[in-house]
Image (cartoon, rainbow, N blue to C red):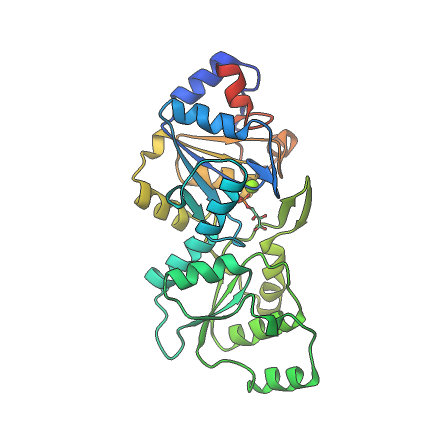
Length: 306
Ligand SMILES: O=C(O)[C@H](O)[C@H](O)COP(=O)(O)O
Ligand SMILES: [Mg+2]
């Protein structure tokens, strides 16, 4: 089994690690922050890497925010960046639908299960959609719903795709509509399928746990456009033209971030232990992915190197 090199407290190993890469792809939830709590030393560590001429790119599976909404969060937490450096699964899904799937009338609409981030990125790509944050879907089922969903009178005949992401307002009504569209042949997509969502130093249902009922009902697995999807890696590489061998993926989750870097044939992967996975997870027999390097927390990269 592959082994992972521990860097925390080892300045020469950290220096050697940093010298190996020109570009760092940073995961967000569990690496930079937990919810709105910014981890200690993150701003200084990013500045330190940038001062060494390193390129920083933020790659998140969290589809609840669009790139401009993420820019506002980064700015509010004191992290200097631009929408150019931010690549989210909502954006990845929107460009997949508009540039690859290319839905054509009369079934060119997307039924969204998710938050405003997905809606904004679909609008940016001129992809029509229904559902999402529409308040008329945030309620209990009525007798009219049971009848109208079953006979299709309440369904939109122009829906050709169901896109599911992290939805903090998921309910029976939304799932019932989603199922009927999939039964009628709509393409099943997910921004990501993370099982859990790291927040406030604990865990909550992730996007994958939101879309799973639809997968369970239909027996279909959605095409996931976030990490570890290599469609996302190709899109990021296409945008930034980086040398994969000189690029490192930094993440807290084995089955998304680390798998993404390994399957993307990047020069390296670094795991931090401030989010979902810990050392014991990748040392376990049959681990889904083993990071090449690991630290306790992101700011370990900075402290020792100076
Ligand atoms: O459920 C989710 O969507 C994920 O837990 C979450 O969004 C992960 O975000 P990331 O760690 O990729 O920034
Ligand atoms: Mg994460």
